Image (spheres, one colour):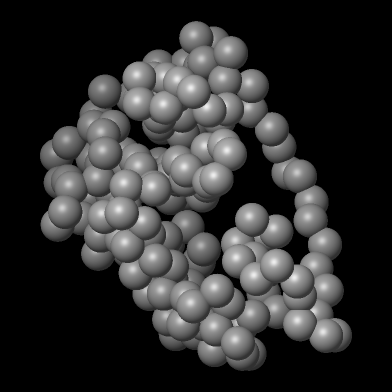
Length: 168
């Protein structure tokens, strides 16, 4: 299959499956997956997040920045030479754009003020009963500057204004 319609060729499906990415009620015969919680964030601690570096602008993505988001994701995943990985990200970005247009995803970015280059990202996806963070990450050369912390804080504040009725 194409991993929930994201256009991933079958050879790439065995990369990684997040249980929340599965849209079918049951797995096909012979397909299994394991989930690992790599970290949890307590939104009530948002005030403890450090301030981000002022050389970056943190905001919702602009309509002309999806290619920049793709370019940042290629660097983050170290797929500059991996055409299969880039193809996978093509599908991910198409899906994100659709979710964003439908209002079920808020894509946050950190961009360098001097160049406008997207270097960090965080998405908030609205599910049936809750919202969740997805792909909170930064290009290696820009890590350690509080960008993910700043994006999380901005997303929490936005979520509290828009969707205070549901957990994040």
